[in-house]
Length: 201
Ligand code: TMP
Image 1 (cartoon, helix red, strand yellow):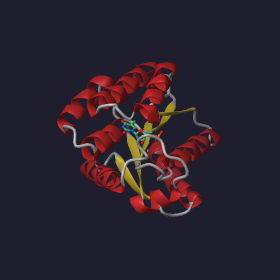
Image 2 (image 1 turned 135 degrees about the vertical axis):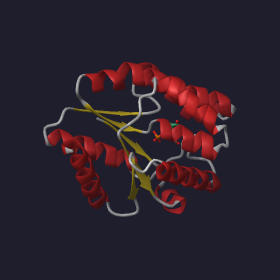
Image 3 (image 1 turned 120 degrees about the vertical axis):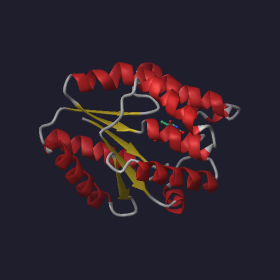
């Protein structure tokens, strides 16, 4: 089983992905918890390049290719082998992030992003994706530090949020849209119940 978490910056998805991974482990499932960009030695170097404020000159297509490069390495080296070993992979961000941020946020060609995602992943698609949805205004209030992308204006984050909702509504079997404005524990209980339901199905 391959489960991903998506959402705008500061939506709380990393906390929720981590709690789900821990909850599933406690329930006796073998779990690999990982993230993008990064998740491998090479991917972590790419992540540094992508998120460093020193790289404000980076053009959008270069950024797109770097996310894809990190994903290709991650899928081949980490995700696919874990799935083949029968583990549950919980991944903080995956292909939908690029569609939402580079596609809907930056305005890059979404068909091209679909094709590049397909090449980077060899067609590996999650069975379950949690979209932690919060308004950008709430995300702004939660923010403590700003990396290169978090420094984008609120219009950018509004476009990314709307993009995520469109993607999710287009694939209702895979996506669960979670109201992320509630408390951590309440959200976790909902996510845990959905994941356990799918695992037992
Ligand atoms: P993180 O804060 O969830 O670790 O993600 C780092 C940043 O990278 C975040 O601002 C979202 C952005 N991002 C993209 O723009 N495209 C992508 O494909 C991915 C995986 C992340």
